[in-house]
Image (cartoon, rainbow, N blue to C red):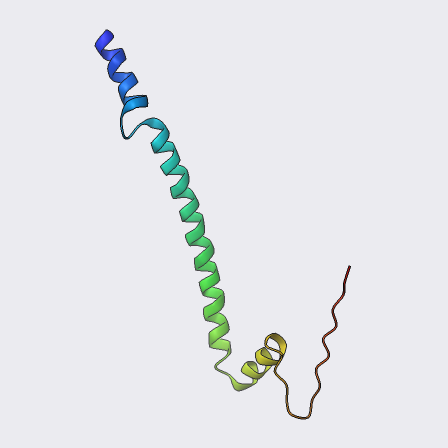
Length: 83
């Protein structure tokens, strides 16, 4: 009986791979799986954007909206709202 109790205590608390380590690693694994899912979604969005930018008109629209590019005869006014 004593041997069984000592064995169980050793396995649960003292061993290198105890219950707490297993639980922590399981939590970390779930976090990493979620991160992989998020990055996969982001990758698909970027890939879609890149395929759209193959078109010259789409590339020009993107440059004007996001990078503030302009034609030579244009002026750009940026309106910002402060709180």
